Length: 428
Image (cartoon, rainbow, N blue to C red; front, side, top):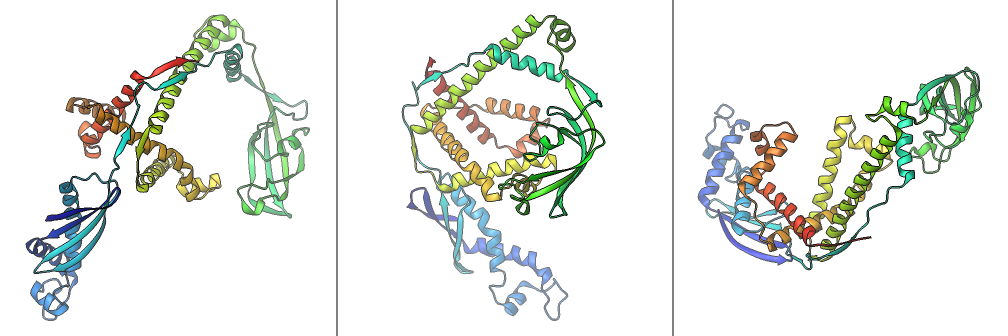
């Protein structure tokens, strides 16, 4: 292989001219023959036993050219990219421009490269740190949650259902006297006032007693995700099977002893306040980092190829698919559940993807400007952490993760620390 020339076509786009020698092409043709001969029948020979020269005489000398080029070009293009020294961000667009036994193969590859990046004023950035004050009301919400967690379920059989109760019902929905899909349930537990069902449904269950069978008239919202039910008036036939309510205990020392590691309400509340204050501090620190990174992106200049944003969106979509898979949910099902299509889901990631790509480029540039280096030992330690996290052997991790990529990630993390350590952080 010979990389004949590297020509800049436009910003972040280059054309590589690649020549494959006649000898290399001949070797590829022979491989193609050995791979394909079993499919070829020539009179006088058993299938797969015909000599190559005979096949070429019968079908033309170009019979194996396409397969040979397919064998050749992936490695040839990869080697040419390495020889060019370009850092590409997308698969090359490859065109075979000439093929002959005498001259070999000529290939043209269009590659998109990582952009040149400029980052200014990434040190000494001024930001305000706003730590939320923890109020008595915040503490009260936590204590209310503890009381709710320790509530007792009491069966109610001496009155009608009320908002705030939990009821068990059978139901079936009808539109124009015809049952519709997804409108039926048995032994369904519904919290009255939870907003779990469409507006008006839960309010009409209230006031009925155990054992009653009755109809409910409701209208589906105009933006409902099932087309035939949008804005449609329907009737639900209901059977009320049971009523229960929560009995919330008072917050006293006895309850605290039973439900927590503390002996008194005061001790428990003091611990709640302390943890809320710690959380407020951590949140403020994360907020400061976000503000700093936003400023870094703002101070970065680069002509970023669209394909980098598209690639990041696709990676985020793949990550979503992987998170849904353990729940037995496909992307198609997810779209149905959320009332979206694939393009709408992708669009929701665009802004986040653009910010992530810009920030990564800026931080890589800062790492370069700061001459940040990452040792082999640091990379090995990080890979061991990954192995431990996923309960894998280190050798297995190395099959999937490139050490140089790990080094880049560590360098980016160090660049973040450079920005944070030099920042001017003021209290609100």
